[in-house]
Image (cartoon, rainbow, N blue to C red; front, top):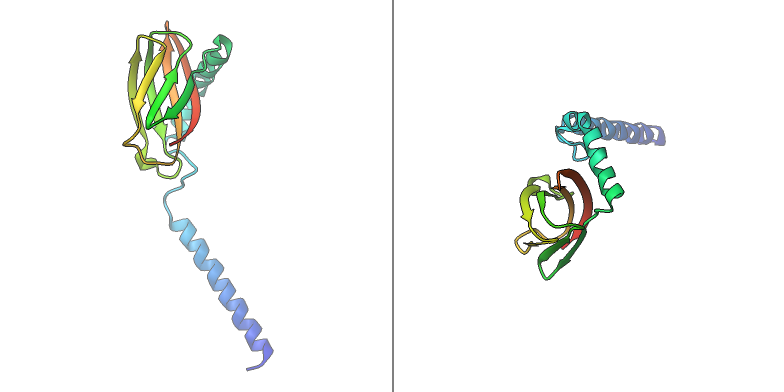
Length: 140
């Protein structure tokens, strides 16, 4: 076998690899970097932006910490009502939304049953009829 034939075989194998990789990527139906409802979410982005701006204007960003399998959230004012939306970057099947109501500034939630690792917490709440939304990265 001469060197010309070896070059042709290597190029053919490389082209076959590229072609099979392209077919594999096209046949995969999921894209983890894209939300399934991205279009609907984009329609309401002005509302989300206003909620985030309310947090900045009112200095209402809650403090969030995890200690001993318990999530502690401290709000700037009492009487809060909303949702805690937990998103797992590595596995969206673990995502969940939990409603909450507080009469004081403090809220506690046991996270001992949650899968260990990195989480993204979105707190969406109302305080005296003013809507807020705040994002936090957690690791427990």
